[in-house]
Image 1 (tube, helix red, strand yellow):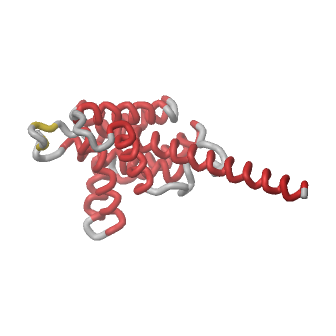
Image 2 (cartoon, one colour):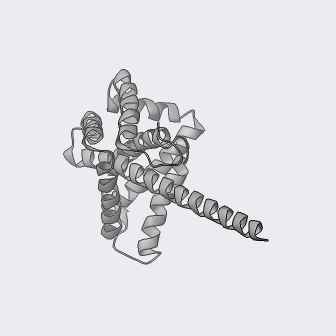
Image 3 (tube, one colour):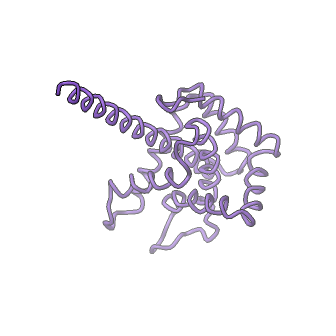
Length: 205
């Protein structure tokens, strides 16, 4: 699996996705897997919290009218949430626990805030940015991984539109995990550079 001191490569994502796929297939497919998780979440505070964080992005993609969701069942949020949860699984494996689901969700929220702040920007613009991050995340691990993700989406729902929301949930999570890891490596490099500079200064005295 991926080393902390380098970003995951495509083979790392492939290996993680294969492991997740084995679990999903053993359970009976993405829909059954997702519903079994929902059932477990009722008695698991940790998983229930994961669901809550995973659904935040879906609310951004949900169509609204007069500041209220058009669909009372929030099906867009539901599909995105389940994709995001699977994305959490992949991120935990590829980044070896370097970040958790809260950090990933907070990163995505921070990106939306950085672009739009608290202004009354059109919800459509926020959704477009999240979609862009999701698409970039889907391209990152390569075609083989994307095909598996699309297979899970097909198992999860018959709706083509909701399948896209599921895949975007996975993709946005992969995107966030990769950028959090990049930030970690940048900080490590800065710390090492500062340490070397201080050592050089001490040696000159």
